Length: 297
Image (tube, rainbow, N blue to C red; front, side):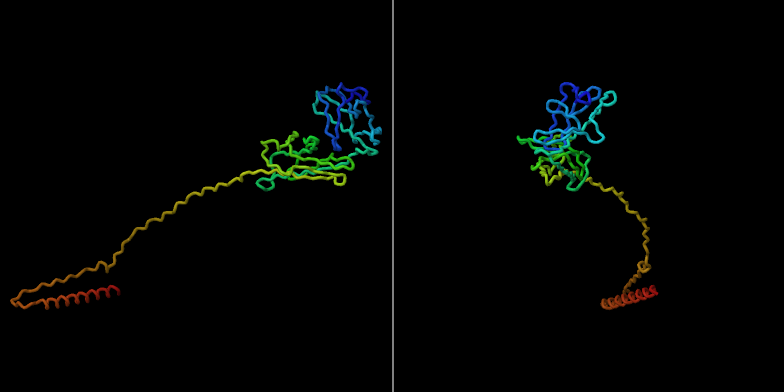
């Protein structure tokens, strides 16, 4: 970082920062902090801090050639005014190769698809999800190259990847928390994560893809049945009970009594009396039957 456009006045003693490509075509950003208000210029330099002239062809040690330039509409001048805003300024430097050296990198991309499943079915959660693209170091640890925000049940494309001519590149994609930390190492992360892993790209197959799935279980809301008011059975008015009296049930009963007359004859009258009783019964039955017939008419 310099205080003039020609790069003759370096800013402070820590005005040079190394940029590592690490197998990608777009590097991670380097930051100059704690700058006072003023105007600054960002130039590419060699390791000793000597500025490289913009848009002038440079030769590499292995026979390649390139020039450093800016994208159209951009410049390498940054003005800092702390009284107005503390938003950081940004400069993007681009190296354009004219003759490729053996270290030339080809570009590659990785598509990351994020699926969210609730109780086994596709859903949308209220959380924001991220993924980091890593490379494995010689000691088996992972180094974060870039981190992207994912789209639920959709795909995002990570650019700026690639490798040297004639070589393949293997990247590792893990879900992260937005600060570069892997969620698999966070016991409080409420989702079950699957699909993380490696993606290999080559010069002939420069587009890789991977799908990361987050699953969670949630109880379905149960609807309580609405209480139906108990209907009271309608009370029927009690009809007065009228007891009918049938004339036939109240027919008068005729009783015939027979009294024997004493005489001086001592003849046994049992048989005669019995015959008289039978005759009386037959007479009563005959009278009763006639009464019933009259009543029916």
